[in-house]
Length: 343
Ligand code: AHG
Ligand code: MN
Ligand code: MN
Image (cartoon, rainbow, N blue to C red):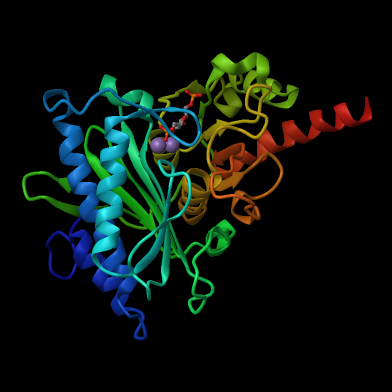
């Protein structure tokens, strides 16, 4: 995408500075933080692209706080992002999927708290399928308190000041929002720069793709089973049957949903009573992006962004995507939940 005035491409760095200049009082700190994330993203992307030849594929041999086996690339991404965020003394604490508690950075005056899913889609690392990184940024609420604690980080998703993701796919892209729409940048590997490729992205109001791991069908609640049946029924007027697509990397599935419309679901089930995906570093940031693009994200009843968090690694069910599709599944869930209550 080219700047209409100058007729040349816009880099992530330029775009961030232009955005900052629109706010005369801005200190530039958030801009620096986003640039630091952009730098880590380039390093991770470089490693992902040559993963097969550098002995970085495979398990690390340990398990993380969730009991999941950790891949070497999970740890590499975690290290790169945390080290990039330590550089500019802006971030006081990081919470990452790969670390049990909070990670305090040595930046006493740091105003920002950053949540990370350093590498999303771990099961796809070894098979050359799209993976991602997710970030979510908050302001520290009590900058004068001496001791940092998890409490400082437990803020509702509505308080995010910025959030986004990097998708290491057929190309590497970075999408983010600061609450003023969604911008997407594509990495040009020949010059090592993220170039603006889509500004103010809008998700279609309705889409014809549903995305859910149907292998878990038998552990779902009735409303979801009925919704998926509805997606599969032939009805030319509403463009059904819908297509099914499921990559197994939330970033990639949600990015496709952003571009083509439709819905991505990771529900509660008998296997995962609270869902599997993490509120603070998977669901909140992607919900912020999708809402900023005109879409919707709920936990089955209410807005994801309004959930009051109780712990930094908590899980939530999620139904996210085009408004039309999310409202439809909500209706199916409500109808069948009532049946259960009234039975
Ligand atoms: P992570 O690799 O960060 O642990 O996340 C994996 C998540 C998410 O990316 C994806 O949507 C989901 O796990 C897939 O889970 P299933 O294999 O249960 O479908
Ligand atoms: Mn993840
Ligand atoms: Mn992860």
